[in-house]
Image (cartoon, rainbow, N blue to C red; front, side, top):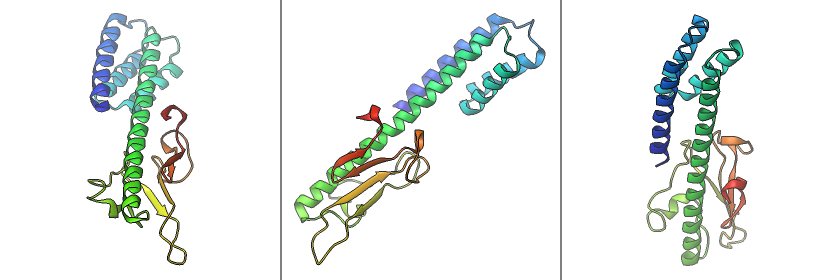
Length: 190
């Protein structure tokens, strides 16, 4: 669903940017500035937003007095907001996955007396399949080691963000669940 909204917003933004570019004319602007602006709009139309953002920023830096400056600033703001929406959407998916896995672990423990040794033991009785995080790597799961034959009483479940490495910010932020409770999560996801 988030992908469809993003595509629609991109299309709308592109229409506005093209109309605005046509309205500007830009005859007083250097030819290179007009070409850069057109290239950025083309990149945006091809949904290469990171590349478009770089060209828009370079354009502002090289040609701060361009007649289409406000349009360039609007496009930069739009792309930055789009990236933020995508990041938040992926983070929400992570939270949903971790909640589903935690519920499955709790059901497993109620029925079997201990948490599973690995997430694969949850399939298919407690969860249909083990989801992958939005960045394509697996969720991290471990239990407290058995001591003298006691059942596994504690577990740790985490997504270490886009880089898959503990610690980080933005897309690399960690979401961590311990025994069914989020102990680390983005403040805006609570």
